Length: 436
Ligand code: GDP
Ligand code: IMO
Ligand code: MG
Image 1 (cartoon, protein in one colour):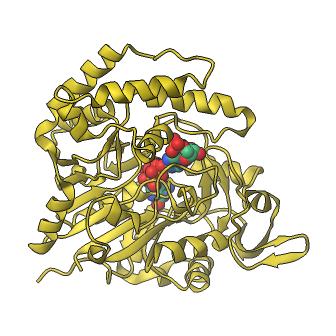
Image 2 (cartoon, rainbow, N blue to C red):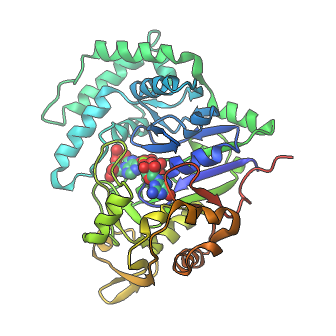
């Protein structure tokens, strides 16, 4: 099967952008299938830094890029990313689903109002209008790409405004943030600018697969932020797991190939919600500083902690992850003792699954297994892995990596040891398309 689904296995920011960019060389098409401009995917190639919220990362290598129906689309962000790629000499070869839902200024307004209303229980959203846009989609009151293109012939926009005004009445501030005429005009203009890129992306991908082309599905967010399987209500509003790649791009589940899961060598989380292995000590600060753990979209400092293998195993099961990409192993150098969370204890009892209860997850005591750390490493030391595998690494690093593989019963296919595209090693390539 010439398709690969890449998803995050933690609370996002696992390095999906970096790994997708690295692998997209081997694929013809890269498609986003969920989320929107809440994502922040960073790609570093030498001196060039690309930060995408919406654009599929494969665009950097000039691959065909697809924004699927499962994505919620902010046309202003699309316009900016398009321009910045053009500025770097790249013209995106883009397809946009006619069924993707549009983020309007009112969704962004409602996102902020909802957070305000929640007060101390707020989710800490990216305030990009994600939740309200998906709510409208599910309530059957949203506005899609095709609806916007048809809007002068239909009364879709009026219906949408009527519903939005009704929704705003539930907040103390009930005025539209932008006049409906201005909002409509600017959305319509932007939509027309990108109309030639709009198509039935499900049809496009299916045809491509039939003709032997390969496709990489690029997940956004992470499994623990998934609306069904994450740490609800501290989650995003879409399904971020591999199965969503079929629904969110309009193809059969039978067309999905291998599942590659991305996981940091430690854990981070942005926004509120339970985080059992969180560190509020010097080691957490080391991870934050050395790992550059600041949000791509919001600039917020990410909360940092030990790698949680209980949560990871849960995420692997839900995604059907067959191969892992372990990222940011370099960040753990020079920490005397490392810990991996191998169990949860609550009221003296060990839990055998990842709990649905937010209350329980807040209360669990992580059970740790300790590992000796390793000393300073230079890029050259890590580079040795490229020719000799992990056997060239310090024994302590090998022990840490192989324990993760054994505990999760999942093969590590890729190790990333720095932000640059070149700082990556493929240990196993069974999940990659084989060309004759
Ligand atoms: P994504 O949302 O999953 O694409 O991840 P982000 O791009 O938001 O965050 C990951 C950050 O870590 C980015 O700044 C990357 O450049 C950086 N990064 C990715 N892989 C590595 C790695 O192996 N080592 C280090 N030090 N940084 C990395
Ligand atoms: P990438 O693709 C990390 C978090 C927000 C918040 C919650 C809900 O870069 O990994 P939302 O705006 O989606 O309604 O916010 O989800 N969140 C992310 N955290 N990485 C992301 O994306 C995220 N996208 C959303 O911080 O806690
Ligand atoms: Mg990110």
